Length: 204
Image 1 (tube, rainbow, N blue to C red):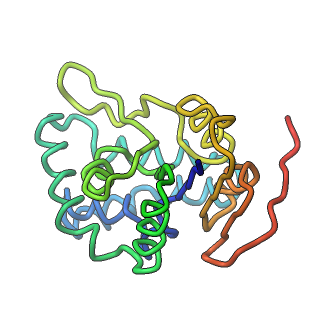
Image 2: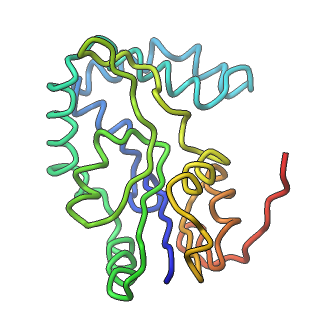
Image 3: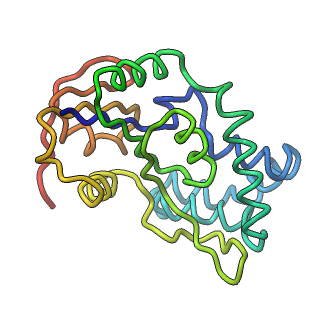
């Protein structure tokens, strides 16, 4: 029995779904105005003063805070069904189907927000582990309910969901440094769709 772990943005897709969904939700004009307002945050991230997860959460708060959760989830569902398929790589779909035909357990493990990934994952019969948004009194706060699902957090969330000893082989697919801890637990791993040698991570 094998486990196949897929990063989403940049691995399954050719573009970032966070930006894609935000444009879908607020429109391109408001999106780019918002990005302009966040330039100090971007600069802080590039200079190492602001961590990646915090920059992402600040963007989430700017665009999503105060929105009715039902309307937000409906918009996320539409984006998932109507627009995500247009940025999905053919090689990713083929590989997911290959794993499913073998009877493998297939899981998307993403730092992106679960709201706009879950319908796509359900339609392709794959499990989902992703970052969750906080909801307060029926409205999106913009803050993360869970830790940003990147780096070692991906491995922690995988181990929380699955007993890895149940699987005799693990595959992992990623495209960024944030995927490397996940790749390190695999027997067979692919970085940007090229097979690479697994590199075991040291503990903190």
